[in-house]
Image (cartoon, rainbow, N blue to C red; front, side):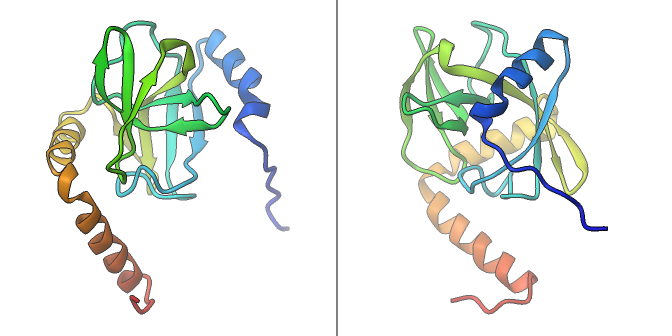
Length: 159
């Protein structure tokens, strides 16, 4: 019997997510997109989301937020100024400024990577985040090397 999959958008299930948060539950979603590589891989890893505590998000946290165009995005907070957030995907170099608290839907509590839970408050995770931030200027080169290594490990020829 083939596994059935229901495809939907976050905007369609947003009321369900909010209902879970209202009931004190966390929500686990599969990551789509490549903006948070190398930590989070498209369609492989899952993020555990919890209800955000208003005014308590800080640099290094990974919120799910809604852009003004309605797109849902999971990126890392790299700065907080007067309650307004600056975001950056781990695989990106251009920051996104001006994210307001009311745009924040949820915040990552942790991740499942290859079925292993990584706690966002863990010491090793926080050290990794700090290192990755310091390496932001050479990220494009590191990410290219990561993609080549992934292709080699998948048995594909790099181009």
